[in-house]
Length: 236
Image 1 (tube, rainbow, N blue to C red):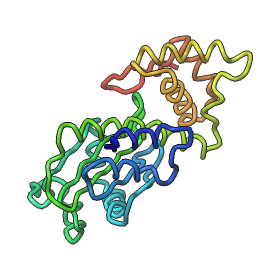
Image 2: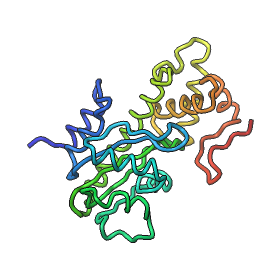
Image 3: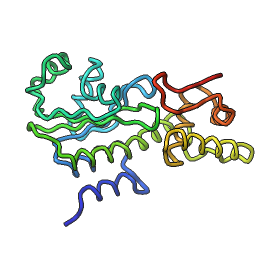
Image 4: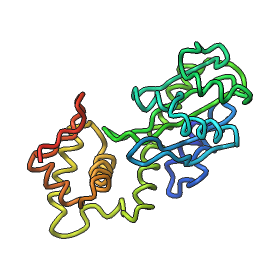
């Protein structure tokens, strides 16, 4: 019998991962009714990247409009927010969100944060029409999907902004500095090399500076990505 999780991972990590249909393979591998993937916050803005159906998209839209809901909590807390029975949810939490979706066919919501190192990108929102608990196995699989999707979302955002995620270190003179900076970010955040490079490029994009300038700041220890309560340390 085919492994639905493995097949979905293959679809997401293959040479031609889905673009606007990112949510489709995830929904096919998990016991949920729908999936939406969105960017949230100041870095990439509020936007639905992919949704399997109108209800999933609607859940995103309501959270964008109201500034509250499981996706906001997931990205703010940096951990999944699992609500197995939305109808029995305490009214003190997300009151406007719950009121806005009271007529939607939604019984449970599970939100997983999208992030790479210190970069908060957005959230992956799963819903079920029935109230149900997400098992530990499916929660782990969802978190694995969110990790892969985080990289795909950031990669696509940089491409749309006119940046080339594959071009880091391509010039003769910048390669050594960028390579060294990548190694330092890798150590600071315990990330694989490709994600460490994305963090450098994303910070350059967000601050309106060049990748070379960011790399030089990292190597000269003016910029440290180690996660602290105060955020990224920039001593420039």
